[in-house]
Length: 93
Image 1: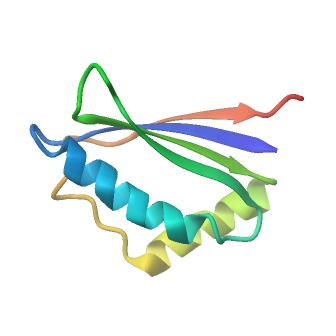
Image 2: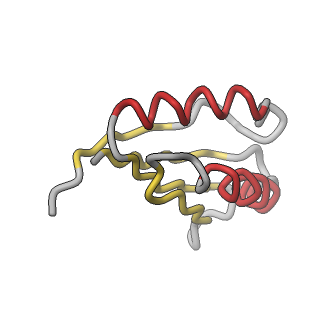
């Protein structure tokens, strides 16, 4: 199983809007075959930081998720202050 932690930095003052948009997207992502988790978190220390925790069965499911995001037409360019930071993990146990 694969896990991803994605850290997104919103443009100043747009953290709540980014978190809300990601929560809308999460509802759709959770229906994807091979998705086990897609949880949106907003930082307590910096409201403009949003973290997404994702889990997928395997690389094939992750690839399908990426394609699904393109099909959804997700555009966060007006909300993000830069590129998301992604960290990949193999789930153990």
